Image (cartoon, rainbow, N blue to C red; front, side):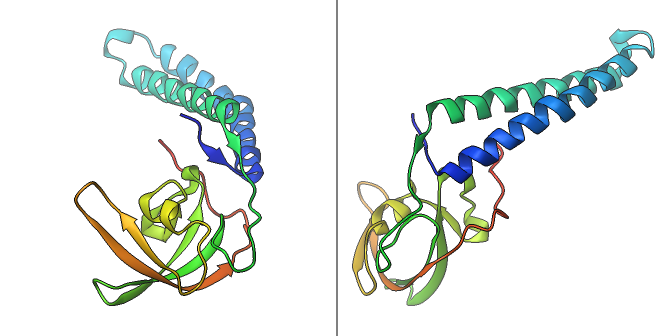
Length: 167
């Protein structure tokens, strides 16, 4: 599966990879050495915890490198009146008679609890490219879906404060 990422996402991932290789890896190796020096490894919890942290870091590095290698780079540019990546939108949910605000982001930044929805989620896929006052059907599964109306679209500048999602 190829993830659609922006150039800024790729840059953030490369920065995290570099930090993990140069700083975190060194600290993890030191922690393993120090715990190993405490003696009997069969009952040394510190050693197992240090090894686990080291392996977790190495796994994250491999994951990020794979993401960078296989990513499809997409543009953050969108027409002024159309929904695109990094746009903040107000959606009116007809069924519930409520309006909610979301920001469309790439998969690695998605966090629905913070109002960041992925362009690959059902809502993100459905509203991408639509305009204000468009009534859009959101298909959840084969038997259920609902309508939303786009009330407002704002271009949101990516300030870099969104963190990459940890898997």
